[in-house]
Image (cartoon, rainbow, N blue to C red; front, side, top):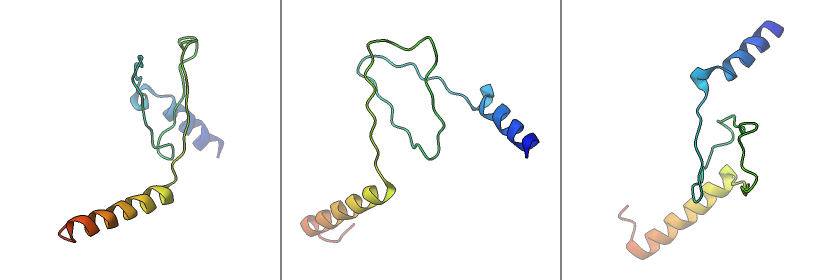
Length: 80
């Protein structure tokens, strides 16, 4: 177990699986939290940034999408 765990830790800290995204005013990023491990670089973070979090559940997304498709079909007909 420890050997496997140490291998996992080495993989998640490997440059092969890391991506740095430069952020600037007016730019935002959306991540699929169930599929992405993310963090913030230490000592390079801005003191003036605003971090806003939000959660959209899978069920909520698909429920709303279904409602929108039903509305679309009512307006345009079920040609899609």
